[in-house]
Amino acid sequence: MGIQKDRVRLNIGGRIFETTATTLANAGRNSVFGAMFDDSWNFQFNNSDQYFIDRNPDCFAVLLDLLRTGELYIPANIPEKLLYREALFYGLLDHIRSAKWGQFDGNRLKHSKSVMGRAPGDGTAIRAGPDGGCCVAHGSMVHVYDWMLEEHPPIHLDYQRVNDVGWVDPGNIVVSACERLGRGDGGMGLFNSSTGELRWKFQVTHENQVKSYTGGALSFSSGDYRLFASCKGRSNEYGIGVWDQITGKQIDFFYEPTGWSHLGDADKLQWLQGTNCLMVATWFPRKDNCYISLLDFRDKKSMVWSWSDMGAPVTADGRRVRDAIAMEENSSICVVNEYEGLGFMDLRSRAASVRWSSRSRLMEGKMPDEACYPKLALHDGQLFSSMNDSISVFCGPDWVLTSRLRRTYGGSICDFSIGGDRLFALHSEENVFDIWETPSPPII
Image (cartoon, rainbow, N blue to C red):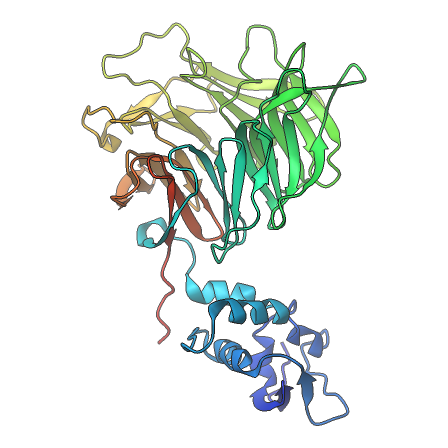
């Protein structure tokens, strides 16, 4: 990178700043300063001896110090919102976020903040956004928070219960909801995360007719921008629908095969990018038994792997599957029961059975006081499992328990989500959610 070391003079709102081209290059190509460099990162001087930018000079002094040192210090006389607004103008919000908290590591997470909701006790799902914000589903509403945890206008669904939510990108959220009989509502919609406005609905077409349906679990593929959702219609529209995230057009539908009546009622979908398959899982109490399948969406749509506990006796300690997550790196599926016992199934075997890991059992046979069943998440080689008011972190080839996150306020954790280098945990009793962050490493 051929960056020149020449000094640069900037006039910011009438105040003169001197810095170097190297410091400004730290802002990156997508910043205001990135446009001042050519393709070889040589600084392009204008005809005058300085650049004039009509912005707040006090905030710029903080941002320039951030570019120089990598550290963020906000003086007491500068409101954080004002600084973030200026950082947005310069294209430095990612630098702000990186300075406020570090790269995600489950074993180094610290509780940062708790946010109280508006409707105690009815939170059903929380989803982390790609930029450090989140959204929380409450009954027929979705509350949206940006990365500064400022709440945006909520998404209202006119008393249709929300089943799942997911982020397409920082500006757009998909919401799936129950159908209301006699009204033709329900299904799924794409909403603006800043305003809560509906952009379009995702329609299901069956035999060249648009059908009303209940939208369920969601999943997204990052490579080709596909959206997957479990769908339950009134006639034969039971299965997994596929839409283009950008246009909203339906591009495929996987109908339930004979003998498998769980696709339209799925509790969880997970797209597996490496194998081009979709994991579909349904468990008690939505169904009497647990069903897990892998669907191949290439030219010949097929169910390439499946497992069910149908016909298997329920063990004395109640090892009934409550959540599942596929792990492509070791070709397995991890499941968890209500005691937070972890089990594993080999995806390379068509006759797979659950191999329960005794070293991971943490509850020693105690049932939870509330019906908040464990949830699983996988992030950068670390496995996370919620139970009661805590989240356990497992690492290594044998998935050894390495740390536990716990807060004493809000009751059991009914859902949690990881994204934007943050972990969000939603509690059941007080409708409060916690934010966990990895502290930034010290700069020596």
